[in-house]
Image (cartoon, rainbow, N blue to C red; front, side, top):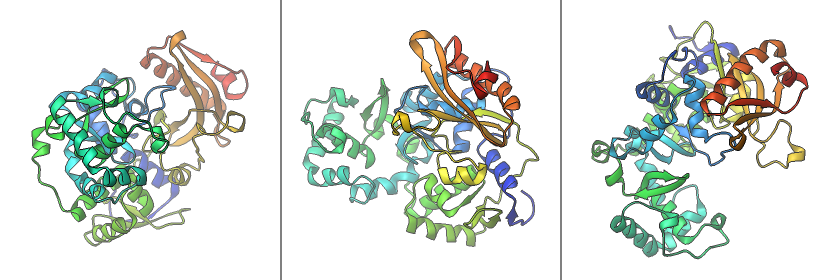
Length: 400
């Protein structure tokens, strides 16, 4: 964005954010290459992993939203193909797939976890109190090779805490969190662990460790590049940086003119602008979004950008749900215009549309056609032969 502009309308902020997230460029009109897939991942910085599989595992969806149909095997190979991998798993936002070259930027978090300064009180306490046991688990992996919890023989007694995890599982997660183990592969979504030096590219393992302040500054640089324009909370939330650290690093980046203070109409909090941000004249996007997509995962930001109040209702009793169990926002142009509750009925080869709701400001007749096309594309990508609509009212009637 040219000049030293510091004041933005809400529409301008929205278009800047969409461009930063990769929605301002057209989808490839041919088979997606691995290079294009990795470029899309790097543009957002990381992919959040979630265990819910009612539609498809969430980390596959952001690339589909931006690129259209692509081979999920490309993502699997990029994340789990030996030491040639280009992504690795760690706690970035939540559990995440992250470009492998960024691994050194998270070593300060691993070190703090070893010292007992982290987010999981129970796992942290276990690591401190059962240090010898955790060492024994690490040695088992070192001697036996990649192990998942189902391979683990000792410490199988179940505990009431830590979500019912076995002691072996808690030990493996603590070792993962502290960087002593990493993900080798996934087995029916079960994480298989191994030593970083046997999994990560040698260049990454041997890369120097930046000091804490520089690592955090770099993570904030990546966050503002992925967000375009953001509040302090948006920026620190992206890679879950500690509040005190994030505030100090933001001041340093502003002083270095790597972040520009800005005001956005309608935002109560001050904002920061990426100095390299670009304001597209228009955004012509069409995408169904995972609930864990980086465009919408921070719900207060989603409301500020799109005037779209979004809550995931998986843990809400069914009779109290407003929009459904696994609801995907639908992006059309530069607005979120609808929300769709979807389920992959793999046994019957069908993509089931359980509910579809159009936003009040959107015209259902204009939404239905693009949404119908996107649902068909999604079904084809998932290998589902048909789209089945469960109701006949409102937007669902138009979708038929």
